[in-house]
Amino acid sequence: MTRKTGIYLLSAFILLSSFILSSELVFHLGKNECKLIISGNDSASLVFVSLHENENTAIDAFVLADSGFSNYTLIQLKQNGERLVKYKIRGKDYSFDPNRIFTEMGIKNTLKNYNEKYPKRLEKDLKLFSDSLLQIFRRKVQNGYIVALHNNTDSSYSILSYLNSKDAEDVYINENEDIDDFFFVTARSEFEYFKSMGRNVALQSEGVEDDGSLSVYCQKNGIPYINIEAQHGHLQKQAEMINEVYAFLQSIRLNINIEKSD
Ligand SMILES: [Zn+2]
Image (tube, rainbow, N blue to C red; front, side, top):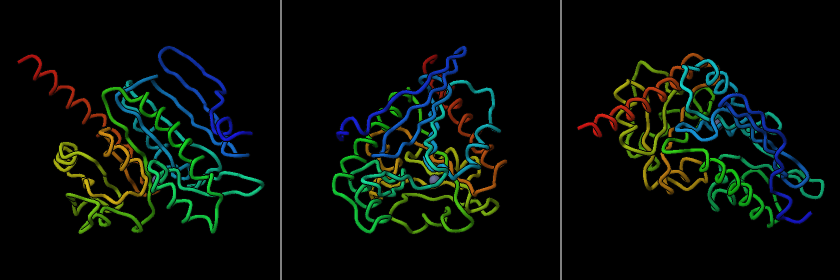
């Protein structure tokens, strides 16, 4: 199989019921496969993206948070139920973090981090894979936000990771909130909004380290982005945070309408 045909997607099925679309795209990662499950509207102002398949609370929270807001799309990447995705070449699996492949530097580093050695062509193959994912994300999001859904484990990665870090331009910590539950945003207006709601929030800096994550790509490319991070098992809290993103979007829409009517 050539490299070009190897990566591109076969569409498996599409279900259409009223305005809700659900589809499954299959990607060939060498001899392995992974799937993109897409549900919700065909294009939407909030495109929720779940890249780490082991972060289950985020998806349960998304279902729980269903607030009647209808203008959304949910995109889930699935392979083996694990954080890392595996690409198979000549009988050997090569692992990578699917949230580290959105820049060339990120692709090289994630392959180096998780594999003792790897064939050089894998860098190009992962670039094609990430380009395909980004094309889908960009097509889905219409005048709105990519909203990443993630879970972390107790105290390994938290809002404290951004204190005195060159990756964050500003950090707000509410001492009554769990440090593992926080928003990570790329624009000042979103930072101020979640701060005003009393939520832990970090604003990514322009000088953020290029780790190939979706937040870095979105900032570089001017795509509005919000990450909802919550500790594994903090279901109710993460559902509340998702509802706050809906409320945030409605508040800016309202402001736009008020400005128009002046
Ligand atoms: Zn994650």
